[in-house]
Length: 95
Image (cartoon, rainbow, N blue to C red):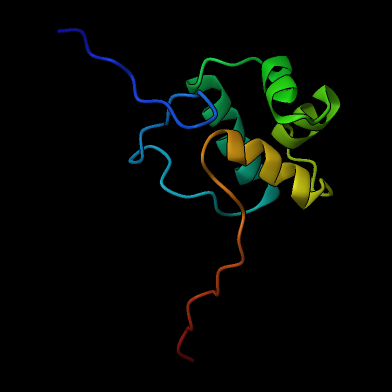
């Protein structure tokens, strides 16, 4: 029997959760994570733009770590891979 890849509703194979457990950090870290998700799915930047309804320029800016990207568009791209942005409270640190 052949091993079949599981696909999300968007048709893109999910990534290895150990390699990318959560989308976190700075714009630069986010850009690297998005690029890794895209490459793991075997998509080009143009494929990603087309499938998510954002412009190619936006995908390039996002992957280059532009700090002023629109959150709704970031979520459109992340949704393709089964992720989204959300606010998470930082851990309390003791003085």
